[in-house]
Image (cartoon, rainbow, N blue to C red; front, side, top):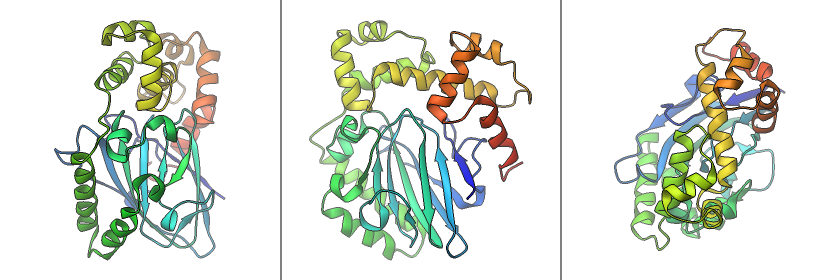
Length: 290
């Protein structure tokens, strides 16, 4: 069974160049002005496999909570999910390994920004951390009707339009807005590539470090330290893009805020499930775009 790679960093329009999922199976749709502060991406995935085929997909962590609505007959070959495999995937600091089976995959993925889970689902991101939860369990009974309306549309543009309207309605009726200071703290850590200390972030947003830890875990779905680790890794991944085939790992480690090259390698294994060399080999040897 072949294992494919999916990576999207903040700023990537659709997916990162390291992604080895066939490019023609992925399509990005506009989020819209009303959802822009809460949703970072709406991505459609459509692919047909040979009968009986099973495909593994390694999704590298970007810190986002994702809603995945399955519209085809394919289902995840993993834990039980909601209707036709639709799930809410919590934020994680480890890769998610998905296994798809059956013949036709057709799904829409919605990546949420920090704090958006509370506003759109009524559930803090911390309650979904590291989990894949049946989407109807967090969306509510109306999810069944939403999925049926989406499936009944004539094309994907219409399906996404139905989904956008549903998200906009939930946002307008939300009783649990995101914490502005948690969102601000996440932005500060990301902008510093993980170099900013949590105590300095707490001071910058006007609260104590312990309180920051509490609201960050609830609204972002992980600790400020974990979010900073992801930000540091993402900065390193960006530095690798367009670089030499044999990167100067020691220099990258020093420039990226890692203690040393061994620390960089350990973070790759912990956060990607791959060594730095394995990551580069996957992106070059398997990519449909090379």
